[in-house]
Length: 358
Image 1 (spheres, helix red, strand yellow):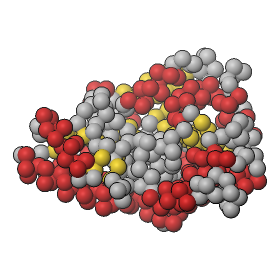
Image 2 (image 1 turned 45 degrees about the vertical axis):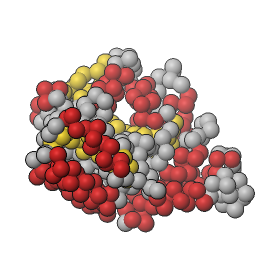
Image 3 (image 1 turned 90 degrees about the horizontal axis):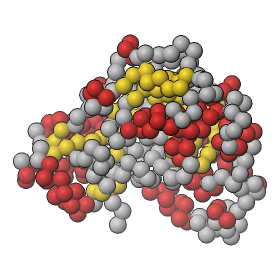
Image 4 (image 1 turned 135 degrees about the vertical axis):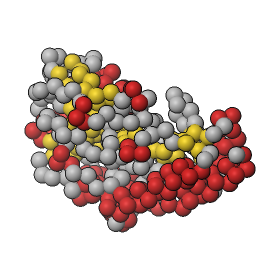
């Protein structure tokens, strides 16, 4: 029996996409082989890869002048790849620290260049965002890096920062969740395992003028220009993840595209936040102006009930609600593939649990 999976990643995937992948697993394209068994340079897979890229470009309305790369290693590898491609040892980059993942990106970038933390949300315990008027930006920085959505803390930017330099964004947990003006960014990167497909794949969208700047010591498989020049097939790519991402892109188009997904995702999140705020039993710590649509953390009035809540939720078919070990409590991740009825079932369970244990 399928459950409602609120995991932050690897996360829930669309059921009809899973069923299609299942049906094609042994015989893809009528060739009597799995997509995992065909050559990545064969005509069939090259066409599959090109179609996936075309659909992603359509969904995000990616302008001309940008390359789309399908890379390995997840988003964490890009913490190194980006400074290796866009800086030298004397470069200064600006980072905005809003929680767990932006801190990790900052720590890794410091291995390769000078990092100025232009803004830090530590004073709010990463439950609010520093006003952009207070950011201490570096004139002539190589780029400004930020994390639009913090998966663990549930803090999300309600705006795109004004940078004046190339803007770099880790969109792992928010990409494809709503329309996006790609033209405002120099580089976007996103691990696949939340709104795109299986873990192991990372999508990079990079402005062409930023290519060709990699340091001489940059590994070839991390050099954006080399990867772009070979259509993301410099080496054997994660073919199953790429194929599966293409199925998800088709599914998103059938749903009505990102305008539809944005409206649905907002409605799901608002329903859950309303249930939390009106309960008198649950609490969300994040400032209302920057609450995430994708990841909703909450705590119970009596923390000793956490294990009882998790067990009861699992019995009701609601799984992976435990909060990250660094913050505790609960967290519901509401990615694109989480159907609205999953949120309805969660809200009903939370209401019943609160009535029984208040």
